[in-house]
Every structure is written in C-alpha cells, then in structure tokens.
Amino acid sequence: MGASLTALLGAMLAASALCTPHASAAEVDVAIVFAVDVSASINPATADLQREGHAAAISSPEVVAAITRNSNGCISVTYVEWASSGHARSVVPWTSVCGLKDAQAVASIIRKEGDRGLECEQTCATSISFAIDLGSMLLDSYVGSAASKIIDISANGTNNDGLPVKVSRRRALAKGYTINAIAIPEMIRSVVYDLTEYFDDNVIGGPRAFVIAPSTTSDYAAALRRKLVTEISASIRP
Image (cartoon, rainbow, N blue to C red):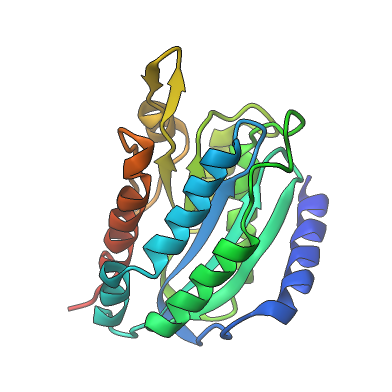
C-alpha cells in the first residue's frame, strides 16, 4: 500500500507539474488539500455540485478577503479527486493563492478539468482512508512553509474500501495535520441521510477540526465558502 501510494503520488506530481498556474510561495498561512469524492455514487449532478462549489468558493469575495487579511496574505491549495483505493487524479497541483487573480485561475482549472460524474459509473468504491493517506502525502510533499496544513474531504458516503478510516486518520493527525469534512446531502427514499455523526466520529480530527453538513444540495456552495473562511481565518495571527 505504502509503495503504491508513493508511486501514485509521484506520477500525479509529475503529470501536474506542467500546468501549475502560479508556483507555491515559500511561506503561506495555510496549505489545503481539497480531496473530492468521485466514486460511483457521484452522479453528474453531484459532480457538478462539487466542481462548481469549490470553484465558486475559492474565488468568492469572502474567501479572498480572508486570505488577504492573514499575515502572509497567501494560501496554497491542491485539488485532487479520489474514489477506491489507488484511484486518484490531480486536477490542480500545489498552487499559491495570494489574491483574486490567483483564485480565479484555480477556479477556472477546477471548472474546466474537474470530474463530470461519468468516469466511475458502478465500478468505484469509496475509500476515505485512501483520500486521507493521499492528502497526507500531498501535505508531506509541500515544499513551502505553512502555519497550518489541512485535508478537506468532500464526500457523500462512508468508507467501504481500503484501510479502516481511523487508521489513516491517526497517521495524519500524528503529523500535525487537520482533517475537516463537508458531507454532501444524500436523499434515500425521500429522507436526507446525514453523515455528520459518521464524519465526526471517524474522519475529522486535529486542531479546530469540524464537519459541515448542508441540509440541502443548494446550500453546498455556501457551506463550502463558510468552511474555507473558517479554515483560513483560524490561522490569522494577531
């Protein structure tokens, strides 16, 4: 598992090196891995929700203002898609966001290159443990200095593939990383399935860790924006 994950990360970094819109700054206030679920349960509508939600959030006035208020005035982000263990794709490599222009460049790549919900169909499981391990290795690979390092999980289901999720969480937390999550609302027989308790008990952890569970899909983008503002503002130094 460790060797294959390292090889996968190396391949992802090599493939993404040519498309970096802005090289990562030497020092940022926070480094964030956007780890986005593209498993079989992610249909085109849900894929659009995640893709557009992340693009809109990172380039929103509220998030850009939170970034510029920080001591360094820069964050660094990477956007990676995941499904079953070993299934991952880099959409945005490590990229500095120091203002609106950078944020819009990242948003443009996410909108253009992000998952459309047509790749996995019925073949991809949901390995949140793999997403955490991948996010942890991406944070390990970050060459700059960040006041805080966060893995942001976006998913609509529980871990059903790969390692037990608590094992991967424990390893990430041991490195000082924070794991936050946003639970995509899922309708099961007209009842909203709330993943908050599962994410709270099994997925999130670290300094100021939290999970957000929008009550409706229409609130996903706004909830993600609030989540990013909270994460970025938490690293503001007096």
